[in-house]
Amino acid sequence: MEGRLPVAIVGGLHSDARAAVVARLLAAVDGSVALHHDLSTAVRGTVRRSVRDATGVLSDGEAPLVNDCACCALREDLVPELERLADGGLTRLAIVELWDSVEPKAMAEVVATHGDRLKVTSVITAVDPSLLLPYLANGDDLMEAGLAAAPTDRRTVADTWARQLEYAPVLALVGGDGADEEDRALLAQLHPTARRVAVDGGDLALAALAGFDVEAAAAAQHPACALLPQEADECGVGTYVWHRRRPFHPERLYAALEDLTCVAARSRGRFWLADRPDTLLAWDAAGEPSAWRAWGPGWPPSPTRPGRWSRPCAGPRRRWTGIRSTATAASTWSSPRRGWTARA
Image 1 (cartoon, rainbow, N blue to C red):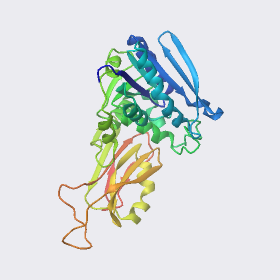
Image 2: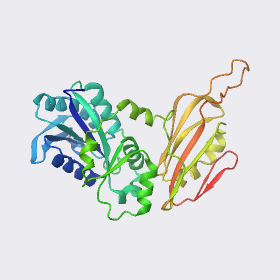
Image 3: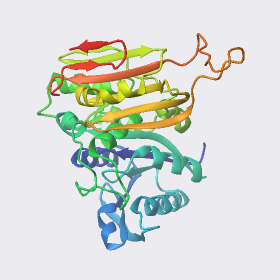
Image 4: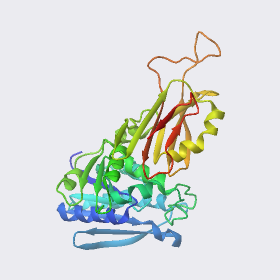
C-alpha cells in the first residue's frame, strides 16, 4: 500500500449535498484534488472531465463514449487520470466525485482492480436527510428523469439511491434543515452499520482516509451472505424481519406481490420457490418496483431420499427485511405463506 495514491469515492443522487462534501474535503485535506466526469454531455457523444483543487479548476477535457455508454467511458478514463495524478507525486488525496446516477460499487472495484498505484481509502455517499424518503419512494426510471448512464439503462431513481446508500460505509450528512426525527430514524435503519458524519465536522477528512475493503463491501451486498438490518421501531419507522426455512408457493407469492411491494419504503432478502428448490432467489424492492434475481444454488438434493431436498439445520433461511415509514401508504405486510402479517 505504501506509495499508492489514496482515492476517496464520493457519490449520491443528492447532487448539492455531494458537491458540498467534495468542497469540504478539498478545503480540509491539503494537497487534495477532485476528479469529476459529467455524464450529462453523453448525448453529444462525449463525457466531460474536470480536475480541480480548493482554488479552482486545474484542467478539463473530454473523453469519447465507449460502446455508446457513458459509464463505460468513465471506466476507461478514470484509472489513467488517477494514475497520472499519482505519477505527479503532488496529490495527497484524489477525490472521485461520481456523477448523479453512477453507483460507487462498480467504480471502487475498477480502481481497486486496475489501479496498480492507487488504493481506495473510502467510499462516501452524500445525504440530505430531508430528501431521503422522497428519493427512496421515487419509482421513476432514470431515463425519464434525465439521469440514465446509457441508452439501455433501466434502473429507477429509488433502487439506484438505495444501492448508493447501502454500499457506502460512510454517510456524509449535509443540510437537512427540513429533516425530522423520522427521516433520521429511517436513515439509521436503512444502513445501521454506516458511519454517519456531518459535512462541517472534522471527522469527514478522517473518514476519507480511514481505509476501505472492496471485497468485504461486495460480500456485504451479495444476497447469499448480506447481513440484513435487524428489527427496529423508532420515531414511527419500523424494520420488520420475517424468516422461515420453507420455500414460497410460487402462485401465492405472485398473488401477494402488490401488497409486498407497496408496504415498505425498502425491502430485500433471499428466498426459495417450492418448484425451484435448487435456486437461491434475491428480493430487492425500493419505490414499489421489485426485482428478483437467481444468485446460486439453494438446498442440495438429499442423497438418501430421491426426489427430496435436504435442509441441514445450519443451512440458509428464507429471510426478508422490510423498512416502513409512516409516510408510506400501506400499513400491513402479508406473507403468502401461513397468513403471517406485521402491522405497524
